[in-house]
Length: 342
Image (cartoon, rainbow, N blue to C red; front, top):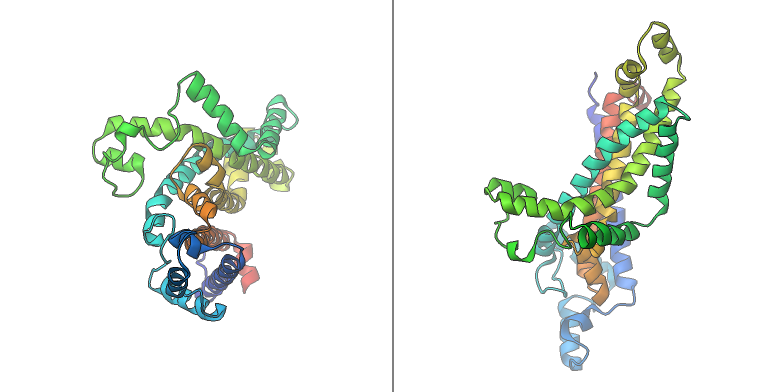
């Protein structure tokens, strides 16, 4: 397997940086032109005009927008996203506290969706038009059609309120909060590292339902695309030749088809993972999950543009970074992409 050339890697990295800069520009301009009043959110509606003007000058909102953008870029270069009106803390500190919860939820969801969606898509393609194929297509259709918040509410009513099989809203029960010292920010990992097995099982009971619900939409997409990729390969001459030589259907899938669709699956999984990080907002609201989605929602309620812009940039950057890594992996694994880049 040949390595990706330094020039090609540099070109893809340059595209990532340009895309990030465009995201910064668009997000910043939208944050400044929206009819919100971040000054009023900080000083209050009853503040006297002098205090209002002083806070506006302190935030730099009295400057032309190009100067505001320059100061914002300067702050970003030094890790300063501004101060959150919602909490009074630096936005970077708030995001550092909220993001691990979203990362933990989305990571577990993408693991579930991958281990269910890929085998289901392969099996559906292998037994095309069979009962399992029709069932897989129905599952994918429902996953694309039904809103996530509906699944969340129904899941809470059935599995939490009714059957009491899972934990309720939040990452952990109230009396367990604050007992685990954050090290990685991932409650499941930190609780195990500190030997708090009781808190681990409690946290697992809380995360399992939102993770499965968040994973369902991604699983539907992964199943549908895996089935499509597999059906395309099953019609190729090399598969027909393998079957003529007596290779079993399972062997054909594992030894011939799966390696040929691996690069496509990498792209699909990266897109799904980025979508889970980006689309966890509704799930976090339903389950009172203290992640970046709920943080953005609370900031939107009061027009806290520093928090909104920073969270949007972080999520957008992660999405672009995952696509960049998938693009690089695609070019490394697929020799046709390397030849096209020359």
